[in-house]
Length: 274
Image: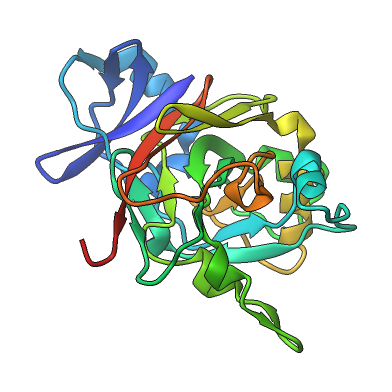
């Protein structure tokens, strides 16, 4: 089932997507609170919601935390000539990285190696701390399509005693486009297709993940409390520009990422001084 959020007169309403129309809830909602009571709200929309044909969607997340695994697809590890990690390894993005479907990806001044990473992200639906595998799986509220945009020339600035420059390379403003629709249902093997100007660059599936979403949530929740609205990314399939197979992004490029069950994002690249 696909869900979206719409904004009318300053109020936010959840809605079920049905083809080109949506069935809108009659009651406004706080986005993160929706995830904590999602089952009841969806039943209410199905029962009492009204069909509307004209609507504008908004970004369906407002996370306190965005946690991203490095090298979590086997094919991506292989293309970058690195061994699969023994445990999940994370870097953060921040709410300021989020941009919408049809929003802009802003290339920071001086960055020449701007890259795409088509991914899926889970949105936490239940507060979880030190959860087991079953509790971790049950904490998943929904799935969205994202693009983990990366400035490789900043990311790969290396300090011998500190490692890579993950924050500057991954957490710039606009570096996380998020789909306006989300999928609610049991975890699936989601396909991930990334195109640049209509050319296919990535064609993968989450069945290639080294650590599942449930495994990552179990690992993270040992020490970090996860709240409704928090996001955990999947990692990316092979086919990134950093592999050497494709050119890096340039101003004017249109990047699209889609997953059949969830939805799509499409964003144009602009330089920061445009």
